[in-house]
Length: 284
Image 1 (cartoon, rainbow, N blue to C red):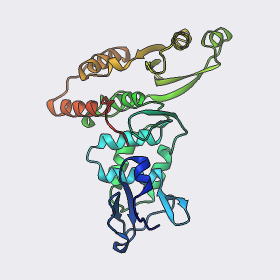
Image 2: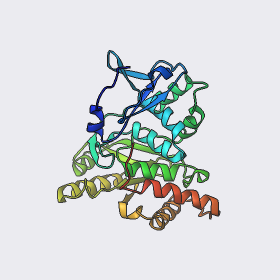
Image 3: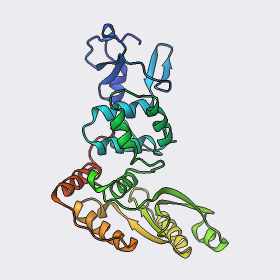
């Protein structure tokens, strides 16, 4: 590891302390802008990427494992997995979206890495969280929907049947392609066997008249193919009460029973929703 002297320049750029992993206690030096962590266990291949000849950066897979060990709430670990496997990015403040990017990793890559980490602290919790992560989310609200609908009730979710995220659908007819002004569309959440689509309509991305027209034309093309399309806005998920009503409607459309839950399950649902619906908090 490179020696850090004086003020850490990355602290000024990131606005927070830098976490440094060292292999022995000899490398643990006091520094105002740095938190030192001791790791005596050998880590497998794929744990680091080279930033410079003498500085390594933790890989996304190692970050997932380390955060699983340090975070108290499993839902936070699942959300981190979604974000690492997503196509959206946050700015330095951890709150403002900073556009799109290729996924940093995938569920399969994280799973393969964890298989090589037998005996490492946090690996069991990381595996438990990874079970509920899905590749390809394109926004925090898609992550919210996928987590809350897909996770089991014992973890604060709603236990919905399987669905896919951002499924590509080819438009088979020239009239539909002209209507949607494209040859294929991507559906935010799709219950394939039930033919039900969930589309998150963001005010930030769908604020203009032209974009609104394109969104509705795209939805109409999907409906013409026999799919049912639900438009989801932030107002429908902002509060737990509104989200409950949304869930009730989706259960009805999917032919699911409206099952009441006990106090402990309700408390976990309240906790998970409060985490995911808080647009003011800092993400990882």
